[in-house]
Length: 181
Image (cartoon, rainbow, N blue to C red; front, top):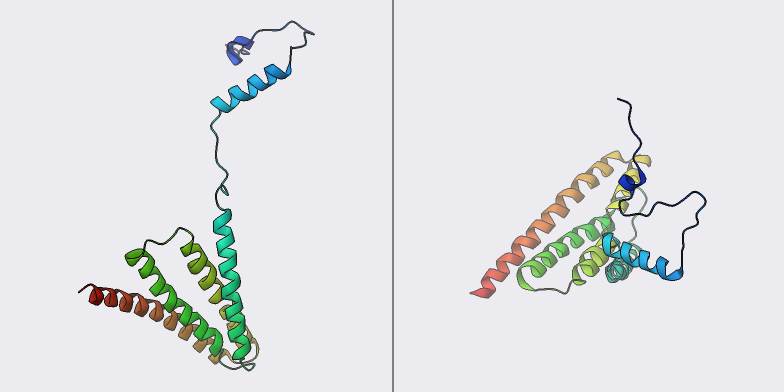
């Protein structure tokens, strides 16, 4: 049996069939009624950005503060070409320790406002720590003929940063337990 073409009544149930050449009546009132009907029947999906402006603003503000602090540290303690990048190393280690303390405080101690974590955790500490500069520093060390220093920096930063966050979390939780006694 050959396939059949659906009728207008099957495609649009309840629609009035028109004669050839007939122009539908499209008044402003009928257009408004159709818009209202479509709003009632069509599911409304909120934009993924709906309500995110304050979060984005806080991350941006915090990021500017953190990046400025990191830039200041780099200006205060410059590193010679081919030398171990101590400033970036300590910025990352200190930032990881601070995030360890911060996460324990806002999860175990303090019911923080919803914008504190984006501002301080993502913004300030995200702008302060710099694992992208860490990667660039490793590349510069290798390119300038200091692959051993680059490898030492790679391993030392990872180990020190992970140790710093672990020690900070552990010490903060221990201090909280002692404080509760």
